[in-house]
Length: 220
Length: 90
Image 1: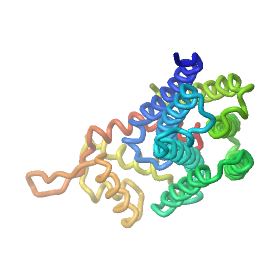
Image 2: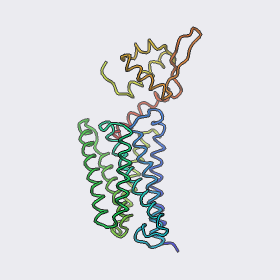
Image 3: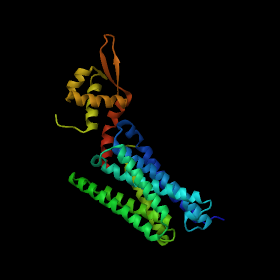
Image 4: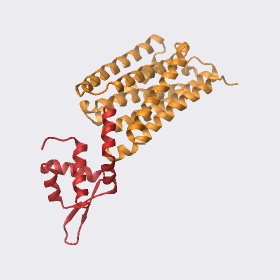
């Protein structure tokens, strides 16, 4: 019999995948009409979040149903490797695209920049696969978080100059922090077990807040 | 004319066409848009590519620029698009 936590994981993943896909869908018309780069990168980010959470659920399903500590212990071996690689790659791309949606006017839009993000995401995924120690995973995520904080700080400073509300940056900051906790939860399943419910509830709340803001502003 | 944001210029060009009963010749459009010839060409090409305007030739072989259904929809949704961009700092 499957452990009941699988049902709990299913609901959690379903809510976040649904929120992400609704954000993607609700912004489609605005993007079709304007072809505005900021909207494009924002949409890509939530599409990547949706697919990443799908893979996250798949990995959790395997871990819980087989009682494994790491997806890399799954046999046949390549399924574990591929699913972890895809999950790490997609989740990094989701974070990069959300940051790019804030910074594209400063960084410019070019194929090279897009390729650089894909390259970095592949490198992060390969590091995640190559090193199986908790210290390495934590260090990797701290580096990503440092990069995110740096970019968010620049975007926040620019927004302050325009005297805009800073609520969005708090939401994004929490989204990135809780996303990293979700990644750590997959890489080191026992590490955050005590806080899992809180992490899930806050993560769901953040996606619902973003969806609400999108639906309100997009006129859907 | 001060430099305007891209979406705002697109909106202005489309509004000129709409206010001219949905079609206008290129020369008066260029004049009313208040852009240099080079910039106008750049935006016009962009509007054609995005299918927000189309071209047609009338009985006297004059080229006319028409606002498309998508172009009218863009004007309707312009305010929403700008507010969305502002809200998410895009």
